[in-house]
Length: 108
Image 1 (tube, rainbow, N blue to C red):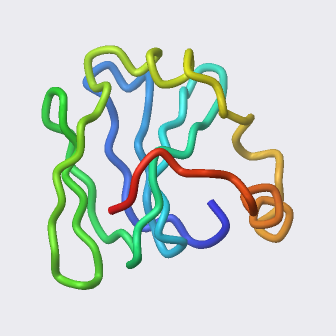
Image 2: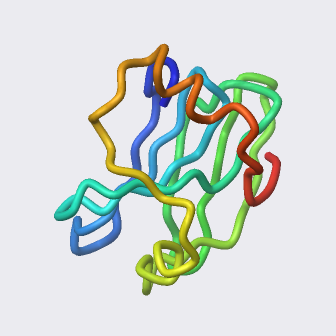
Image 3: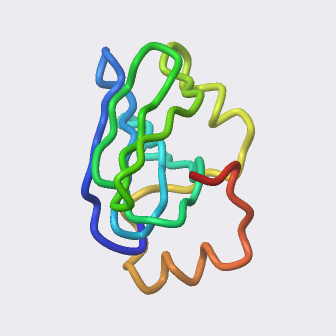
């Protein structure tokens, strides 16, 4: 994330965590490898996340709630697509620069 994380939702086995926050972005992180993948970027900060089987519910500051497909049963599918990075190695400013020019999977 390039700014504060305001919401987390873990898979049932706590092997992966979805995170969202002030930077409008939704990420999935593998907690064992610390590999993260940007899933989508919205127009408003993310306040809350809820994982429900194959969906992720996203509540944002514009008082809306969106439901997006999630790989809750098999998050490894996301990492097999590529475009991931090692979480926790970049400062906010360096992370912001590394995301410029990247294309998110979808918009919320």
